[in-house]
Image 1: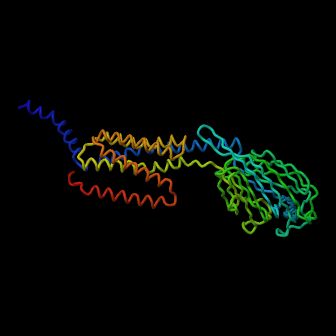
Image 2: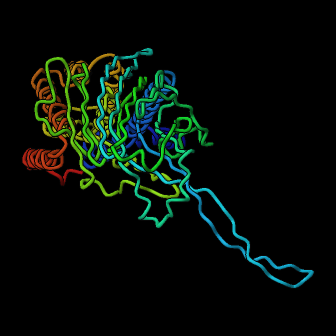
Length: 467
């Protein structure tokens, strides 16, 4: 009797294991719970893949920034501006401690008035080219910029400044640019006299909070200027050659500003506060854009006292950046990874439940890992090709792998082919959503509704009481 009792006791764990395995095979609830747990576990590799995409995207930005800094960053040109000094006076009361008397002392200081041109014509020729480093590339350019215009009589009456306090023999002309490093030529002719520019240090050499730092170029003292010099408008002409990257912008400071820009770059995009007025700006050779901007079109005046205002927000220009949206699209596709894994597991679950074919948790895990491999293939291939080709290669590879693997699990070709077609439709649906912008939400919602309706229809025959 003791021997028999001992034998039964030793077989108890094996019986419990067999019962658990049998329950896992036969219970719908157990299989459903197992599929849910595996789906959640596979979120871990999806999270690491998303981090990989972020890292590669940041690396791409760093390389582009490094190339741009060596060649020359984006160009924002702000000029030309007359800088006219004038005297101001203030009174200060001083008390003599010995005599206990007070007296008033007049203090003199120098302030500056800034006057914009009455008309400004900007003519620019920009020829971009691609620069590559490894698998990353960016657009840089050489630009020839000509600024022509004239200044009318400066009006000091707005600030109630006495004309006799204006220091005409210290007047200068200034131009501000975001890209001092890229300037190779800067020449000015004003009132038939040639001038050179010199840069002035402003104490800010680095970008802060993604804002451009403007550097000032100014001439020596302009010769022979007085209030009588403006009986006729004083003409000026500036010639600039600047190396830059990514984009080029101008600020329309003329009472009337006209601008033309020609280039051999066909993928440019126009942006800023003002857009070209000509509809035929794109040509077979590139583009030829024209602007016409009046002082009525912008909310700032033609003269400023004390300090030159920051007017970056009113600039207009052209963007030459090479669009690199592969990482953005890959990141968007990873966000649908949970949906792809969940629906694929649900498909296998329904096949397993309706056909009574046993699928082991390990096989579910292999299928899930194959689905996550889609995203690593997508990211790595898209770095060397376009997104569509990478998506096709990754999709065909993963769908073929899962279809062939399903044949070893499900024996016949009927279910594996159905799975392959379903995955093809799902990946096609996700690709369409990724390409859409304005209609992504509505198309995605309709697609998920249809998928839910199909699942509800197929699962209506399942006996959910068998748990």
